Length: 219
Image (cartoon, rainbow, N blue to C red; front, side, top):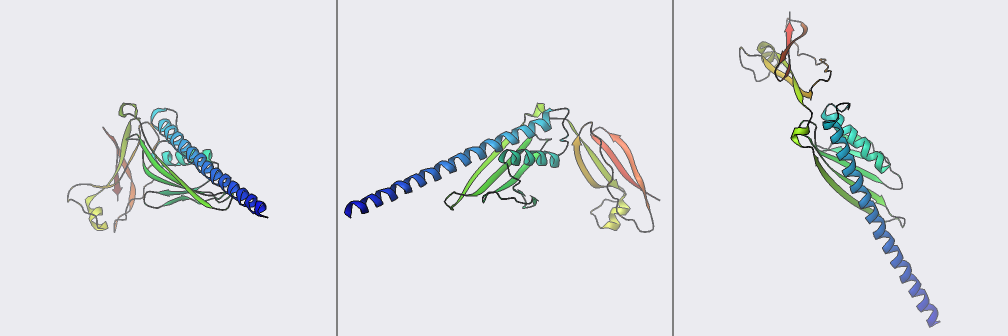
């Protein structure tokens, strides 16, 4: 009987050791996979945005979307994507208890930087919960970045006054501005503010050294 008890204890200890080793190994594999996928996806997306002349990644939102799509594709999940201010980009999809959260810390094709961190929550085969994290900062050298310009929307100071903006009398008010990749087609579908007793007619376009200036015209 004594030998039977010892055998059972030995077997239990052996099984426990195997489970521990498998758990540690499983977490190490997930950590390695997470770091590899994150770094590779960020590097590829940023280089495509800043170096390729044929890319469709023409602004920061497109850079973020391309990186997320690439990373989650490598991780074979859709994940739950959270921006720096907590905005959720996508719903989460879980496979065997897996949930991946991506935090975009910086994404700027004009400064040539992409920074992100990720957290993966998963379930071990024995039902236990585990978490691994990783982060990356990718930078493209300044001389390699794609040239950019600004599109600037101005409204008359009288309109700015009526709208409650901090205006200067006699000077057009900068209503909206966006930076874009030089050479790309830019939409001018920004809505001008209302001006009592007047109707918005069009945006009057002028070319400047640093981009395009659009001034609201009212009748």
